[in-house]
Amino acid sequence: MPQRKRMLFVCVNRRPDGTPKGSCAARGSVEIHAKLKELLKDAGLAKVEARACTSSCLDTCWAGPTIAVEPDHYFYGRVQIADVEEIVESIRAGTRVERLVLEPNDFIEPRELKKAE
Amino acid sequence: MPQRKRMLFVCVNRRPDGTPKGSCAARGSVEIHAKLKELLKDAGLAKVEARACTSSCLDTCWAGPTIAVEPDHYFYGRVQIADVEEIVESIRAGTRVERLVLEPNDFIEPRELKKAE
Image (cartoon, rainbow over all chains, first blue to last red; front, side, top):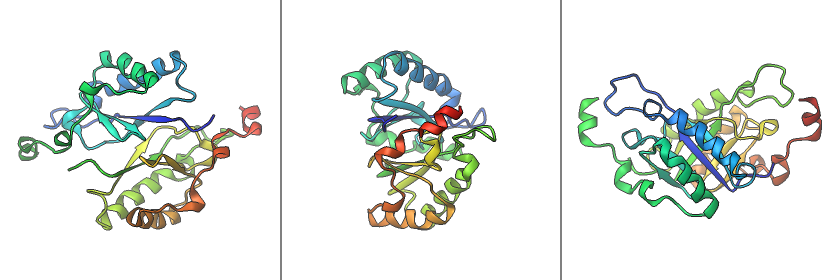
């Protein structure tokens, strides 16, 4: 199979319950990855357009569940399972789901979380 | 922490022993990821230049251990732990370790492996 045009890396890191910054897996990212993989396949996009992988921590826990979209090099954040269909449609269309794209400020850990650690 | 300029996704998928196409973890990728993370940190590159993550299967098992380098969107393959220092140096220099970069043919599963499955 040729190299896919895009790779979507879904963080499935799980921190212990009660960790102040939370974790993507605790917010449902394992299920999000599974659905993303299934819908990419159903849409006929899995072999050429995009592969959905899981990844370790992408270091934006407070804005998770997070998906790194490469090689475009943007992150989706606060993804819910209901968003997956729109993400797959955007892969097909070659667009982004703008409301989910993290902004530069989202990459900075909020001060109150740092204090709580 | 700002978004890193680069992400290195090291496949740590492990297939059962004896699987014809093998797997990256069975070829030492867990240790490769750990060393990559350590040397990026030691070199002062971990906070801005590059983050080393683990990932699920990148679908080039026969050419593993595999590392997806993003957003450049090339794959390193057949990586050995002795290669990690050179990979980190290339991140610093903004270059690639050309001898490790997978070529288009490397993405095609060899016919003899398909038959063996």
